[in-house]
Image 1 (tube, rainbow, N blue to C red):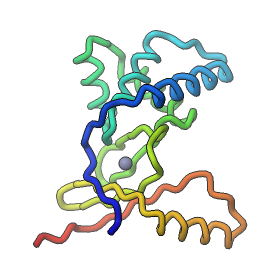
Image 2: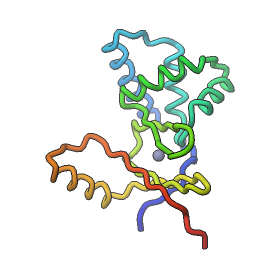
Image 3: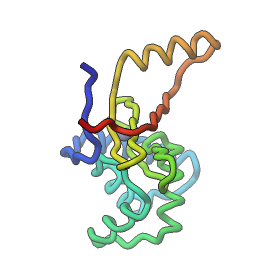
Image 4: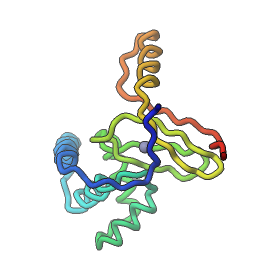
Length: 157
Ligand SMILES: [Zn+2]
């Protein structure tokens, strides 16, 4: 049986993940000669505390709900840097707004997306990962990351 779990279940944040993200972001900002501001820490905290897929709007709302006011422009800019730093990834859900998820401390997984209900199923199938690696190797590639989204309609019983 493949290991399936529905998305959107917030799990408790493992402090080790946050420390690793913090360290990685600090190094990234230093490399880019950018300051590690209170605002940036707040955004990183919010991103790492979430274990689901979220839009910029949702992130903006939850920051606001936690008393941290960050403009959308700042948020977009910082999400780009978090992506570049390898902490955050974009999840392409097809027709809808761009969604994000943090990837640091999360196992590589694939998204199976129902186009009718927008339900997202995550699957970390080792078989698929292996198959992709074989494919990449055939073309002389070393895999750095795999992004796989499968779109379709979930069968109702
Ligand atoms: Zn995911």
